Image (cartoon, rainbow, N blue to C red; front, side, top):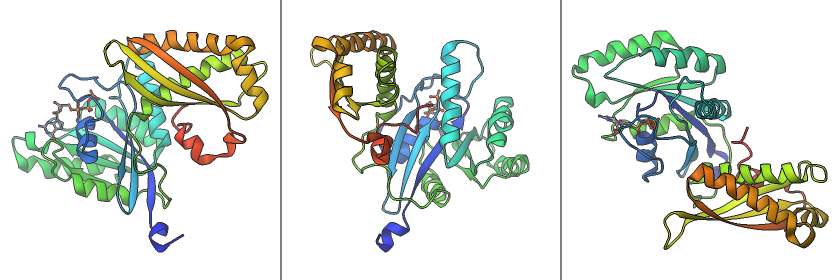
Length: 306
Ligand SMILES: Nc1nc2c(ncn2[C@@H]2O[C@H](COP(=O)(O)OP(=O)(O)OP(=O)(O)O)[C@@H](O)[C@H]2O)c(=O)[nH]1
C-alpha cells in the first residue's frame, strides 16, 4: 500500500431527519448530481438512495434515508425499517433539523428513539439557516442542541445556497474509518433500486429452489432502462451468480422451465413495485466462491439488505 492509500478513508453515512428537512438537497449538492427526487412535498424519497462522494483522500457513501415517520401501514414499516437499517450500517449518523423550526417533537423522538440507542458518532446539521428571520437565534439553538446530546459536531448549513457544505464534507471524513475505496470511481448511483430489485429476484430463486440451493445464488441487476419508444416499459438486465455448474442447471431447470418461472414471478412483482411494464432478461453465470469475494458482495449490495 502506498502512503496515499494508507491515509485513505471510506465509510457509510446515514442522513436522518424528518421529511422535508433537506436531506436530498444536501446530498445532491455534495454529489453534484440530481439523484433523489427533490420536491417541496414531504415523503418523495421512498427508497434508500445511495450516493458516493469520491474525493482524493476519502470516499463517502451516503445512505439517504426516507424521512423518519410513524405509521402502521406496510409502506411506512418498510420505509422505517430501511431508515433504521441505514443507521445500523452507518459509520457516522447525521441528524438534520431545520433552523427556522428549531427542535420539533419529531426531532426529539428521532434523537431519543434511534440516535441515543445506536450510540454512534453523530453530527447535527442545522439546515435552512437562510430561512431564519433572526440570525441571532442561531447561537442559542446551537447551545440548546449541544445540551441534548453529545454531538461530535454541530454544523449550521444552508443546503440550498451551498453554505457550509464543504465544511460538512471535511468533517464527515474525519469520522470515517481508514479503508481503501469501497466502490469504483465511476460507480453509478441508482444502486439502492438495483439492490432492491435484485433482492426480489433472489427471493424468487430462493422460493423456487430452496430444497436444492439454500443460499448459493446472488443476483446483480446490471441495468434498468426505460423503453425507448414506450416510456411505460422498463427493461431490466440481471445476472444470477451461482457457485457450481450443477447449480446453474438447477436454476435453469429442464428446458429452461425453472428460470422461466423465476423470471415470471419476479417480473410480476417488479411491475407492481415500479408501476410499469417490465421486460426482465436473466442470465445465469457460474462464479466459484462468490460468497468469499468481499468486493463482489459489496457490489451486490449485501451490506444494505437486511
Ligand atoms: N430555504 C431553504 N430551503 C431548503 C434548504 N434545503 C432544502 N430546502 C427545500 O426544502 C424542501 C425539501 O427538501 P428535500 O431535499 O426534498 O428534503 P428531504 O429531507 O429529502 O425530504 P423527503 O424526501 O420528503 O424525506 C425543498 O423544497 C428544498 O428546496 C435550505 O437550505 N434552505
